[in-house]
Image (cartoon, rainbow, N blue to C red; front, side, top):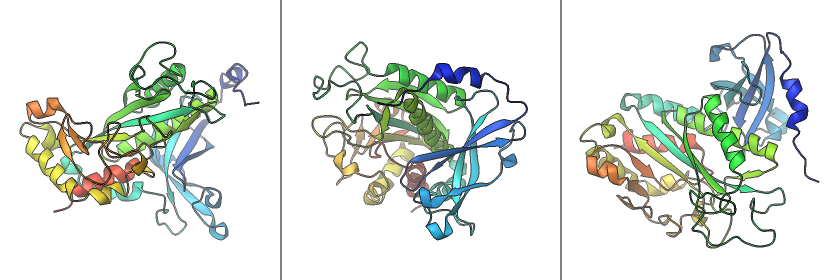
Length: 354
């Protein structure tokens, strides 16, 4: 029997006063690209990230350290409001460091922050479209007929109505939780494959893109846990004539957003074309299963760009081409990317290389 969350039993306890103490949930990325968390009690309301302590955990249990030297340290990086506990309780996005002070092998934020600092005068903005798929606890896509398949793709994208949309209650809960937490979520929609959804985060400047996206994922999997639903960020969760899942990454600089910015967009695309393989290497595991040249993707083996072309590596929105400035969309990143790696390499290629 599947575990059933019991909000009616929890509610009276969450309503109890907690004195002047605050619960701080530290969230971090583990050695397999998943998310972990644990909670500490803080003596007073947190108004500054510097007042939070550096904490530690057993890295040998998260594939981040060997058993004989297992302590990994959590350094607070960003604070969000906690939608699960409410009040002054907080969620803390934390970076992982080894005991010698070096960033852990899984800590891609450290390098991305250096890159963002070097490029800060260009005021880089990002917006990421996070696609994901929902599965039942038995491993079947959520809401699909047991042992069978729904009708072909067509009516599900931005759909409405029974049989076309699945788990809208879960999705609405996630949207509101992100808004409460202070995540810059900018929209949601049902995707092309049934039981697949997308939400958008951004625009976020620099390193905050990775912080907001990782925390939004944490909220999603925590809320889905309460529904008894599994979240998959795999780029091709089901073989066959079904769309994969991506993390389209929209990008602009101050120069691109101003009149005449198209020449800066075109210059950036030219630089990206020369580093296609380097980008693909950090654009998500199993991305080759998704980037086939079908189902609204470009082929993983070649670089392309075009106006309003959803089969290209880089898409320039038609409105941007018409007005001559704005942003571009990198359609190559898979749904399971580390956003610190993707935003970091985009900055390195377009702003910090010749």
